[in-house]
Length: 236
Image (cartoon, rainbow, N blue to C red; front, side, top):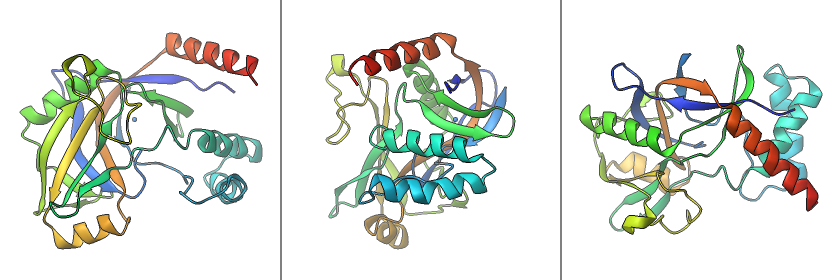
């Protein structure tokens, strides 16, 4: 089954945009309130395919999916386990800074809700730029929480915000070489002892954004994915 793809849209004259950057354990979007944290179970670093599938399917069934649908979702997530990784990296333990993507341009992100069912959403480079402009104009540098629930009052500071732009010489950091131009990366200085301990222990692995967004279905993107799928089958 080919899933629909929606392009995230942000407008200049309404409340759409990112409200918070969240530190989360599994980083990952009409007008819905969306938390860009993985909705479902994801493969772990040392997990085999069989181990993941056997763990994933019962979770999907528990979410209300049929057996075949649950299996399809789990196998899809396994195949995308590398491309979907959005964890940050500790750049310096001495300086206590972490860097990672807030948004990766054109990356299809799997979503599910009771109205649309299964679908993907993407942010293009222009939309990411609009989101970032509204974010800084609202002085949201200190808008940080954990697990999309607990506001961080102090000790977490954004010290770097940039967009991949190879023509300008702004390259992706090590480990994110495949990030497309227009992807948005953030670096935070973490003075908060409790949060830093959880980052080092791997309890929080990446950034996740939350806010209000419009969506437009992208027929041309769906057609492109069909063509790519057909080409890949020729090499199978």
